[in-house]
Image 1 (cartoon, rainbow, N blue to C red):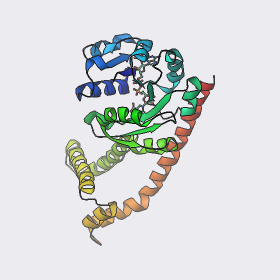
Image 2 (cartoon, protein in one colour):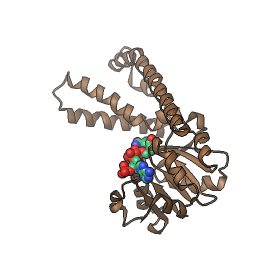
Image 3 (cartoon, helix red, strand yellow):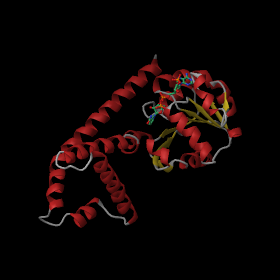
Image 4 (cartoon, rainbow, N blue to C red):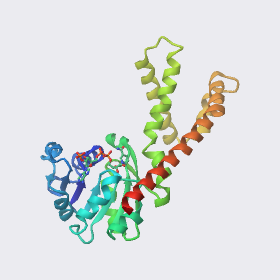
Length: 269
Ligand SMILES: NC(=O)c1ccc[n+]([C@@H]2O[C@H](COP(=O)([O-])OP(=O)(O)OC[C@H]3O[C@@H](n4cnc5c(N)ncnc54)[C@H](OP(=O)(O)O)[C@@H]3O)[C@@H](O)[C@H]2O)c1
């Protein structure tokens, strides 16, 4: 199976190198293009370099790892070169299948990656349009599995799914950044050491919950004895943080709606 990647930016590069380094694809199976071809020099040893149309002609699965504003133009450019049963995979959550199908009626998948794919620890989200068959899913799944777990969702849930999987590393980093900054105000422990302790504890807590099938309540119950120190801290978090989390999702989902609206406008131009 031949794999094409159009757009060698942050995501395209991660996909290409992950496919190659995990051995799921060899150089003869990998094709890549980019608007600025000079950027592709570093990929010459692991993939065939070409134009968007070369990639479309060669590949059975074509990843569009380009920004939403470029998707319509690139699809128009390659639609007549794509193999008749090619699976076209958009990495963008804001452009709906309906919009993609307006340009060309094809098998489409949408894949939402996460930065944690870099350490093969991602929750990669995927949804498919009606033309996609089980054989297509089976072809795509092992590629995505090189980056971690693959989670299939209905198209209408990809927005919230993206908040939970793709945006969440940013949210988690922001939350624990605030915690470390506040902790530093009360201690002589160097910030670097605070961050390391908190990060290791965060990873350990997640692993503990997953391995022992524990709920959040279970963990709180194990650590926060009634009237104890952890209980005092936990009470503050449950009382104060719910409002922050509520605002976070209201704002991000609204931003997502506006982004989808802007993408729709580009497709309708
Ligand atoms: N970054 C993330 O964490 C993340 C997470 C989830 C989803 N996504 C989605 O993934 C997609 C790609 O994001 P990204 O972060 O990889 O963007 P990026 O770093 O800006 O990369 C986009 C790439 O597309 C290339 N490009 C633009 N127009 C092109 C054209 N006409 N033909 C060929 N290549 C073209 C650009 O080339 P140049 O070298 O000329 O600029 C650039 O290398 C976006 O739709 C984004 O929403 C990203």
